[in-house]
Image (tube, rainbow, N blue to C red; front, side):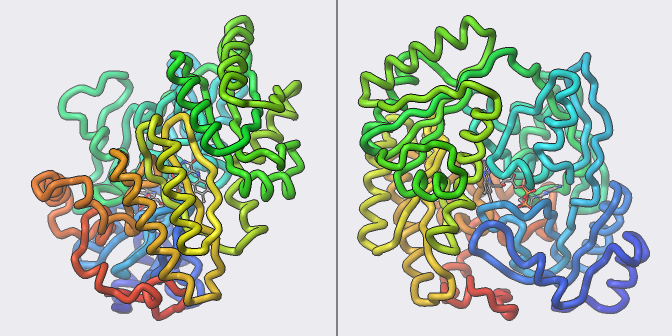
Length: 480
Ligand SMILES: Cc1cc2nc3c(=O)[nH]c(=O)nc-3n(C[C@H](O)[C@H](O)[C@H](O)COP(=O)(O)OP(=O)(O)OC[C@H]3O[C@@H](n4cnc5c(N)ncnc54)[C@H](O)[C@@H]3O)c2cc1C
């Protein structure tokens, strides 16, 4: 329902006249995230500080209007999509790095700081921020905290929650709180642990204190080719089974390598069935030793054409290919549908073969590029949204892939969150009692359910909606 003139006026009073958007064409810019979901908000508020965030949330609470925090909109599960309309709380104007403490090795940042900018700012102190989603040139630290994001180097360093020390948050009633703080051990009830990964459903995050790490003195990066996804998957299990945990262990299949190489010319072997990108870091002697051991294991598992980056520029190029892989897939089809189920590493060969069969069954190209070391697969189903017929098949294929993940003892998401896309599947892995406990936490912190409604929790109505009407680029795609 459009907001009344008096509500819009109130929003402008607290956020500033230029910081509230209501023009229909401008609103459409905020219709989507990186998923295939979409719905146009009724208004955008762009606060500049915590007080404005609190004031906007209080207005929403007073008028019973849904409110959806939003970072860069790179999320891949529809988390930032305003499925029930209302106000999108766009946090990207809050983008100051407030403090870098080189001695304590911490940083205090506003939520709109772009992930990579924090590492760039910390580099003169020989420090970096470890969680590195492949979208790190665009995504925000606030979005990362809300999604508990991972990234290639989270295999060794841990995901976002392992690096957040404390947060300032605004709850659904507009009250402002600090949860946790400087100590590595969170004292009392671990509210920070509850709020990291809550996908904008429990609070708006307004400040984040994070841990920074020393930049390792030596880094070695290796690209290895394999005849097939199967042999590459076995090599992944063998490396970890040998007790080696590399800093990163990423896999790309033949389809992805072809697209990446055509775009980045990074020297990826296009004849390979799959490639692994492996990185180790530490002191020079240990990285040399570790890389030699890894090479041995990869060779034993049919690895060939192994190439170690000789210069930082070569390393950057290898990573540019990996981190830009999803964009490069646009060379094949303009749209992708990406799921991020996670399985025990030993199940990778089975799940990838199931993914391949599902793609063949639906006659849809599938490109795999993923954090193999974590068992976190990312099948990208490639399609063209202009072909409206194909959309239903894409969604059905995605659902079948997730089902295969769960059947093999996996979970619905390794890092992208549940959001809108996977909420209907939550009963696959949680009992009604489990879900009831989660909804009690939600009710305690957001009793009226206005913070990012329609996310995480299964909504019986959702599956009844016609698929094609749900996801087209139509402005009228308002679902409730
Ligand atoms: C090409 C590509 C590669 C990617 N690679 C990875 C990867 O390697 N690892 C990974 O984990 N993810 C990856 N992602 C997914 C995505 O980038 C992450 O989920 C990221 O953390 C989202 O950040 P954002 O700022 O874009 O948040 P948005 O998409 O704007 O929002 C995501 C969720 O966070 C909530 N939110 C945002 N800001 C706040 C806030 N301040 N307070 C409370 N809630 C908030 C929103 O309500 C929403 O639910 C990738 C995405 C793309 C497009």
